[in-house]
Length: 459
Image (cartoon, rainbow, N blue to C red; front, side, top):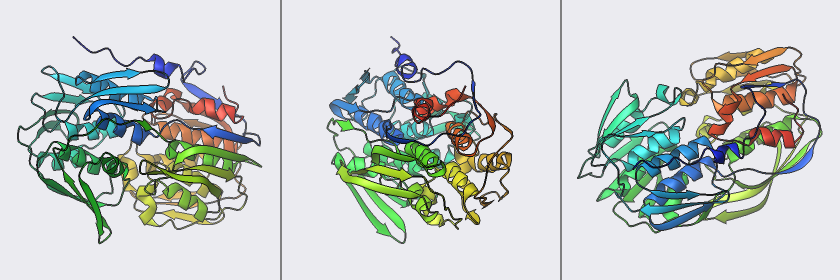
């Protein structure tokens, strides 16, 4: 009997927005002094669900992000035989244990728009005893999966695909073997997929990884999964021993800094505004946005800093900033701010002087070619910029003000392009027509409600 998908009402209840596929913004946002609470971190929400599925017993999450990417994750797990209850406040997963998935032949799993889900779940399927097809939407189906399938093949699993893109048919092996993997791109998704595969593998898997987000490592440590992380020559050496039983666990998921970043930049670029964002995940592998903005002169203060189950969280205080300066961004911060560069480019647009950002080819491996879109948005705004295949130079204008019509469309429904464009409209003025508003459901369903709460006017 086919599992019933997680109810779409979970998305509709938090995304009761005006009808139509685009929004129009004609006015800058007025000064505000507010407090915001942001939904749960997307990376942690997906990782919690995947690891809870591998545990024994019932795990519960509070503040799980109710976005399409997370709903896709829960639906895929249900199709793999995992029992899930999802209410307004709590998500409950009854784990099936390591290699405990139970499903019929020729199963199809739809990852939707989620690269995190599409890539990480492959790591949990290296032991699958029947073929499983992974599919995704138009955007996800354009993204490269060889960076995942190549290391996972070393475990013994088989992957059939055309041009290294979705759809992918995976057939696991009965006897997965530990591997040594060198992750050179600074991709947390690649690293995490291999770590999840190691759970079902006897012996010790060794990963030599360029530094990137470490949410998976912290969760492994919290769950007492045998893991050892050391540093050598600017690499993280991660050793994981598999076949360790995982106990069920409860998790109050902290707020997402990538979602918070939209309001950090909105406040910094708006007139006479102040904002406090509560309980934000400030994991050091995610705070590149804070470090870069502070270099540019943005006023950000951390309050009530504490550690929660390995993750560092804090309240963020942000004030409007009049004097911004251009920078040559240290490339070592790139992987720590990879989802926020569209917003960083907006700050550079209003900064005094020239800002230079290099080694950003990874941006074009996202839902859309984001480096290209960053340049397109700036050009539409009238901001001079020069882009290469992996860099951009932005000529800032502290007096930037837009007095023309700006249309943003055909961006593969990339949620971050939509939201960054909305922030630009509210900060710089102009008559903006921004298409595909439903793209926010991917990662931040309440985005438009939040900007409306701060005083944004749109139709």
